[in-house]
Image (cartoon, rainbow, N blue to C red):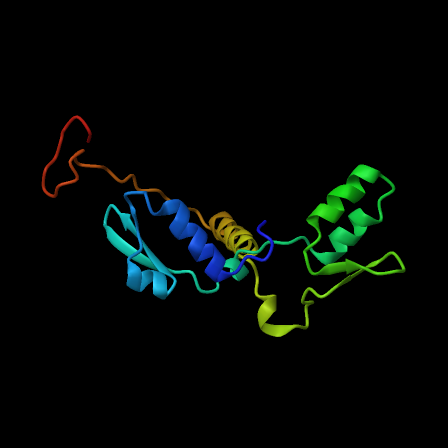
Length: 155
């Protein structure tokens, strides 16, 4: 968790920590536009950090944090306070009042990457379970990764 993180602070941190890596690239044009590139084996791929922090923010649901705060165990309460988002303020009545968007708050209620991944994985497992898959083994013809060259020891 990075309190107060924004796309800009994420980009600056990325430029600072990765600029010395041989596969990382960010020229002055890219830095001005909050872009960066990664040199993959197949070529350079440019990425944009816009919206990255928000869509990768995985927070506990408010109900879960409230449940932990209501615990009689001091340790669990301490953990709950650590896990509370920065914009959640405990009220005088002892319950927490959050400015975190709820289910009716539109665009900022996008599913996080973790939730999307879990949902897609579940959907894939369901499709696999509903079918009788047959697998085809892919062969790597040579270690040099050149076309039309076959190494019989590998095949």
